[in-house]
Length: 118
Image (cartoon, rainbow, N blue to C red; front, top):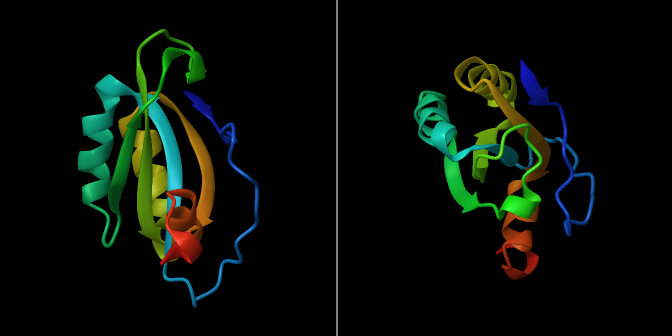
């Protein structure tokens, strides 16, 4: 299996969001080959309250997987209780990829340009 356990994306400030019940949703960044993106989306759709909220095609220079295939970054929204199931589904349905960091929903909205996550 060729998964990278963690990858920090360039230009993203690293912060640590507390895993508390006050923030019901989190976002997990996952990078996979474009050809695998549909399989990931279908698999994640089977997790209660989880789903892909954003899909960003990556420029070739930003891809760091073993092949030269075009990649996408999927941003998966999930409740913290579904984290293990989402990871299991990812590893089960896609042969390789990069699992990025887990951020709070508010932090995700802020990095998408919404002030204070509102």
